[in-house]
Length: 246
Image 1 (cartoon, one colour):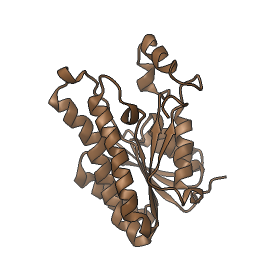
Image 2 (spheres, helix red, strand yellow):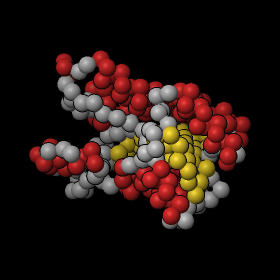
Image 3 (cartoon, one colour):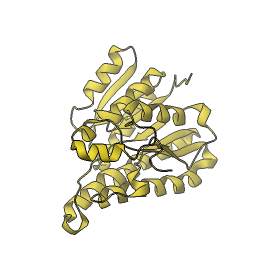
């Protein structure tokens, strides 16, 4: 049984889908969770956690606003004394063939998916170094590993997260901080439900386990990496994709 009691976690993009389930699962294992998302969107997730007997708070955060990131992190540390776990989950997709892709769509996806993860990670890094311990877990994608037509911006951002994590893992290992990546495959969320049935069936046919993943599949992997049981794992990419890419 994973025990995260007395741990404090910050989860970005925690308002719905994978992020909300990650936040709830961390809380169920005993962590106090700061659920961050734009506007008031994370309040529902935090409320669900509290109603279930866990400890959580909602934070309004636009992850592309570096000043806001620093404010949320410093506020969480002021209230809880520390941040032990950072989950970089916030992300967007703006799909289009590269020939037709607007520069604004490239910039927006890189800013939200990659640069924001840099900002959030940098904000927690000094406190984690000072406390000589921490877990930084970033949600990438199978698309960042294998590519996908029409998603050059998304693939670039998700591949960049992998490179960033591998480099940072070497920088901070001596301080007791682990840095890892979870790379989900096709996960059953609102985004995939919006796909046409033909597109969904095409993707599903590539999955050896014969089903789409669930947000809970991803959340349990995050919980493991956040735990003491994963203390000797760093700089790694854990694929949660049903075998569609190995």
